[in-house]
Amino acid sequence: MVLSSDASRCAAGAFPSPGVSPLRLTRIGIDTYRESVVYMHRDCGVCRSEGFESLSRVVVSSQGRSIVATLNVLTGERFAADVAGLSEAAWRRLGASEGALATFAHPPQAESAGDLRARLYGHALNEEQYLRLLRDAVAGRLSDIELAAFVAAGVGDRVDLEETVALTRAMVRVGDRLQWPRALVVDKHCVGGLPGNRTTPIVVAIVAAAGLLIPKTSSRAITSPAGTADTMAVLAPVDLDLAAMRRVVEREGGCLVWGGAANLSPADDTLIRVERPLDVDSDTQLTASVLSKKLAAGATHVVLDLPVGPTAKIRSVQAAQALGARLLAVARATGLHATLRVTDGTQPVGNGIGPALEARDVLAVLRGEPDAPDDLRASALELAGVALEFDPAVRAGEGRECACRLLRDGSAWRKFEAICVAQGGLSEPPQAPQRIELPAPRSGIVSRFDNRRLARLAKLAGAPRAPAAGLRLHAHVGQPVAPGEPLLTLHAQTRGELDYARGYFARHTDMIVVEDAP
Image (tube, rainbow, N blue to C red):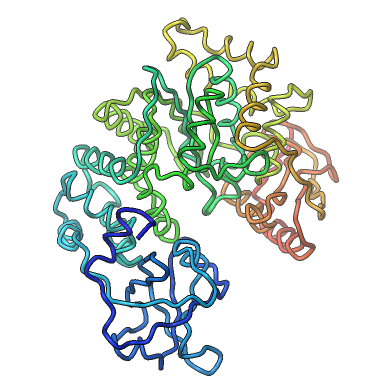
C-alpha cells in the first residue's frame, strides 16, 4: 500500500476469496464529491462469491494500492459483469489505470466500532478513543452513515470542554504537523457564513510583509459561493503538498494554499463531507476543526474573526460569546494563543461574491486602486493589525497603523506577488462571458441584505464550480439608489445559469431591501 499508513492498515486482514477472478477497472466519470464509490453488476462473480450487497464496504486493490469504497450495484445490460466502475474520488485515491485488474474483499472490522457505539449512547470519549475513530474515518473504514451518526452525536450541548480538547488533539494527531524554527508563527481564521469577506489574502500579505511567519491553509467551498482556496486558485496554484508549502513559507514567510492537498488535520475534511448535507455545525466540531488546523500548520498565535448578523452563521452576540469562550478555552488547553474579534456580519464584505469576483476585490485593495471596496480594506487592516501586535516589537494599539503603512507603500502587494510566484505564478482573474444588471425597483436607501439568499443567488449563477460566476454588488447598506440603477450584476458562464439565477432573484427581491430615505 502506498496511499498512507492508515490506508495500508485498512486492508490488513482483507483478502479476496480464492478462485475469484479479478475485475477490470473503468473510470465512469461520476462525481461523488469525496466519497469513494465502486460500481459492480449484480451478476458479477465477485458480488456472488463475496456476498456483496448495495452499500457494502469493499476493499479495492489494484497495482499495489488499496482503498475502501462503498458499493453500488447495477442491473441491466449497460454494464458488463467482468467490469468494476470507480467514481472520480475512488479513481483518484486508488491511482487507477483504465483496464487494470482489481481484486475485492470485505474490510476488517473498524477498531473504533465500540468507541462509536459508546459515543452514540452519550458516553464521553477520551483522546485515544477519538484518535481511533478519526483514523478509521480518514482511512475509509467508516461508512458515511456511521460518520453521520458520529457527527449527530456531538450536536448541541452534549460535548463538554474537556472532551472538545480531546477531540481537537486527536484531530491534530491523525495527520502531519508542521514545525517552524521561530517562536512566533501567526495564523488568521474566520468562522465563515458571510459572502465576500475575503480578508485572508490581504492579511497574509500584510503580516508576511512585516516579517512575521504566516503559513496559511484554507478550505474550498462546500455550500458557499467561494472559499478562500477557491478565490486564491484563480490567482495562483493552491494544490501544494506539504513539502512545496514549506518551501514557499521558508522563501516568502507566508503562503495561501488549499489545506486538502496537505495532510494537515485530514479528519476535518472527512467530517465536513457529512456535516454539510446535515446542515449542522456544532460549536464543538467547529472549535476542533478550526484549532486543529491551526495547530497542525504550526501556528502559535491566531486571530479569530466571528462575524455576527441575523443571516450570518453566528446570529447573535450571545452566540458569538459562547463560541468565543469555547475557542479561547480550547486554544489555551492546547498551547495556542488566540485573540477574538467579533465583527459586523449584517451584510456582505466587499463587492464581489464568487471566486474571481472576490479575487478582483482582493487585488484592488492590495494594488491600492481607487475603487477598491472600503469595507474589505478596513476589515483586513483591523485583523492584520491585531495579528501584528502579537509581535513584541509592535506596541499595543499600533498594529493597525503598521498594517496601513505596509498596504499604503506597496509592501503588502509586492509580498503577495512574491507568494503567488513562489506557489507557481500570479494570474489575472477570469471574466464571465454572460452578465446582466439587476436594477433597483424603487428609489430609496439600501437598508438590509439577506446573506444566505445572496450566497444562494451566486451559487445558482454557477459559483464556485465556474470560477468567474457569481455576482457583484453596486450598493451597500446606507447607500441611496434610484429606480433603474443597478443593485447588482450577475455573472455566469452560460446563458441558462444566468437566466436561472435571475429568476431566483425575481422571486426573492427581499434579499436586498430598499426603504424610503429618512
